[in-house]
Length: 382
Ligand code: COS
Image (cartoon, rainbow, N blue to C red; front, side, top):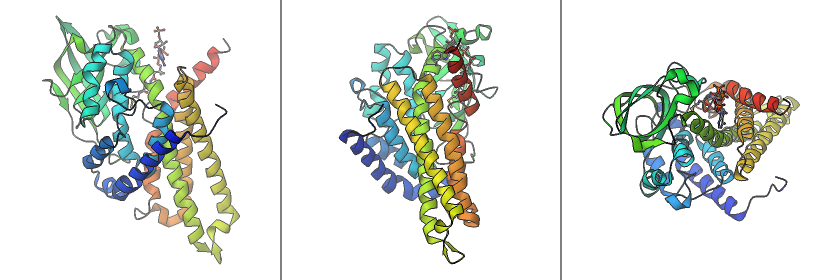
């Protein structure tokens, strides 16, 4: 990891994402946030430019990006709007189980369609009765001949109302805990698949979140990923891959907060000079800068580790947890620098604070990340 320079290809991906974010996303971010509008036309444009399905390899029609390249893109998109970015990268989360647990035939069946046409997909793990204790999920999968019958409810599902495909985790026997869990690919048009209404959220309001119910949905055996009981491992390995881009998303929010705060500190005057010339503000800006840079480096280090073939469980939890906590602190300080104006919806920073909060919660709360980190740390001393 000693070489911190980006290649020409990485820089051009970053430029492409930055241009798209600034011209297509940023101008609509405040309006979508206020109205809770799901701007599908923007997601379609992101897809046209190849900014969706970032993790799909070239052999299935994707662009075959490294995780570091994905993170560079995600940071730029999140700088413009974290909510839109969440909807854009939800496909990566939903398709990753197919890459991890799917057979070659399943990958060829499910993945190319996402690259040849615009579609959304959702990852369905969390349930109303519990998200952190994923091994205790209750959605049932009952084998019936060459089908499984799915019954249960998933919640907080990104893109839930609009997805055409769901990757769903369900148990054949709750008493088996982790080893009873299976992963399935479920088409939206399967009878008994019922997406719920969109939730009203505090932030990420340009993304859509809903419940998805399975009311006796019959899923063909050939849509099960891996063997019976492989689902928990598939879910965990998926999250090992997808938590690093959440670090990048949090870094994008933090960079936007710092950009706004620094620019404002040079314009706003108190006691006869711009507030940026007061040491109280300079110290805040310096701390924000240090935390931002640490968040980016930890995210890049995690991506590098995974790109070099390691599992990266610890690194991805460190990146996701540190970057999202830092992003929350940076957005909070940015709002403080804006003072009363920061609290007003006419200014951009209160949205950044609301958006930063979710990164501490989704894809595993930061308490869960600390459990993953501590377990890995202690296993090295056992
Ligand atoms: N990769 C592969 N296998 C893994 C793994 C990983 N990253 N993490 C755990 N496993 C395996 C373990 O090796 C163990 O296997 P065996 O049964 O063969 O020994 C099994 O899975 C159970 O692991 P563990 O005992 O660690 O499970 P816990 O119930 O203690 O839960 C946590 C582990 C808390 C880490 C897990 O439930 C988790 O990540 N929860 C958060 C879920 C989440 O992020 N939800 C958000 C959804 S997306 S918005």
